[in-house]
Image: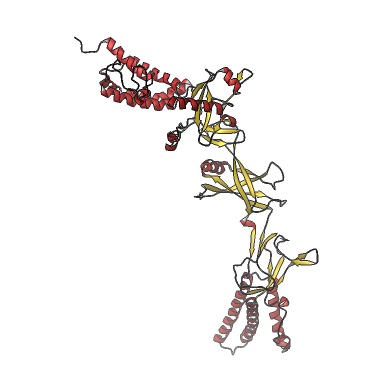
Length: 549
């Protein structure tokens, strides 16, 4: 007698496997009643004979894999998409042929495996979140009008996508001038004035000044002493030159003495140069330095006349007209005064104090904050092609905004906001914009490669999940709810991911506790309905709730 199982037994085993898969294998192991089983999920006495334990364990493993695969399937997906998702399961089945052979006592042939795979594919029809909507219901929900279903096809984004950033304006640091005194203490003895309604008034923030315009006059003891040192060096040099000249014409003068006189003249020249360099460093007007040199010449000329009464010491109570300690502060560049930190007759002791700050306002710096998730695309396009942006604010001259260019993308991400600073310059020739003003910066970027574009009203977002209803073109009444991942939202369109990573598709622990399904991709060319989303979602949730009772 042959040890091989008879044909009827072989066929019976095939029927059992197909029955378990097609009749709800998950329900079998979860304890849900199905035909042939008792209400508590155990086999009844009249059920099929007891299976070998290895078979039960192996089948349980394949049922889990099958359920996970079916969870990512949609009844509205194209056959090639379903086949691609089933392929890993098919490969796994082939790899485990020996396990099945041991469990069943025989080798599965190609025909049996083909039937098993066909049965798995048929389970796609059992997917939850799918609902059949009759024509009259589609009419009442607005899904169907004038005899035609209203839907949109997922397509590739057209043109560029706008990236809108919150930003603010500020003065360009390259055109902000800080005026300080280079010597202390210094007393403000004069402040420039401008015309006013009643006479004149002192300069103050908001006034415009021109380049090299006089702003204030300070009196400094150090400046007066340095000018005096310069006069002393000049007069001494004249005397030493005279002595050297006389010594050079006399043969009785020793060579060593003549060399000493030459060294004295050279030392006087060095002292003069040092005093002039210090005065220049203090930003003393060149005309004032020339005036000091001229005065030294006058002193030397008077020496020959022996008339020193003109230069006798005298008190000078009017410091405004004292040219020795006088220092004139001038604007290094044209612009508006934005800060003033001294008053008339005030003595300034801090050399780091900004006396007056002047800013040019014909151009402004814009500082925006870009989300770090957009950094890769933003930096890539900026580095390769350069980027421009459009600035819009209440002070903009028209609705088209102000065009500018991005000059820098920061290297440091804000750890609190997870944003990257983006800087650029915009023109402000008419002076309508102010520093510190809130603006929005719009940058046109190329859309990502892994998204599709659908109308905004095709997505239902309740704050926890975003879902769409996919229409089966072969069965218009069949609509499948699918949770999707929205990447960008615009005024009337949204971008939805067409490719998901494994971690992105899996629901979180919290979502699993709330019964929220994982995310699924929305493929190019799939059809989504535009109305009735809220009603359909509620109907599906009610059905699933009733099914769970």
